[in-house]
Image (cartoon, rainbow, N blue to C red):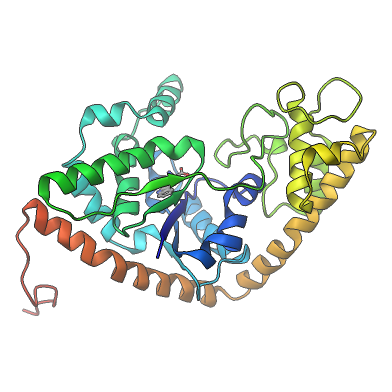
Length: 341
Ligand code: TRP
């Protein structure tokens, strides 16, 4: 059976972009078709300046939203990265297979490090080694498919390279994964800046619809979306990106087609109004379920505990095999039993 692994990084509140770009499909398709793991990758949130309490809060929230969006713990494994030691354990071994040149060539590292330096800050070493940890996330589970967006493809390529190199040098230990382009409902762009994607980490609120935004906040953000000059409603991604974004969001929410929908509108106002209502209705069941889950924190905790246990059992043999293959001496039977003095 295909094994799928994907992760969300708790560095910001999850957005409509995360939902339509990934989460919706995880719930609707991936968890049914494959042996799937979905992970809140909290260790990755420590690679840039962070506030400990916020990371903790966002991690719990992300896990709750994954469940609220329809991931079913009976069908897939939902867990938190730091609850499973194998990620960090394997990451170190992979650092001994990767080269520093390889790390410094990663586009995301170069961009983020440059931004950090402009702000006068220092760059954490973990930002450089982040792609190795991500490779460990994937390889520990023998995942063959990794549904990620364009910006993460280079990291999955690295995971492939490291798997192949390790297998050649030390004997077969890893499945060689590949990035799969998730068939997304829509690539949602920032409502105030339709040239950049609606990411969770850039905090410019007014262009970003968060999954937990109140209906009135959603309406206000959509109504204030920048549109292009011009009057007729046409679907043209290059010439009219603001309008195209609204049409795509509406199409994704209602199951329609953006260029057909454009024919149904004669004014921007009417399009915005319908888009706003469609988003409110899309988010309503997710928000309702989120509220129910928040009222029962013991349930979410239990799901994460079981998820971590399942994940650990899957990852452990693979990581142990890699440790042996690379030359580390096995601890021997019984070594894991705590010694009482
Ligand atoms: N780096 C990914 C992101 O920023 C998150 C991530 C971490 C991930 N580990 C992963 C995604 C493993 C897929 C598989 O979005």
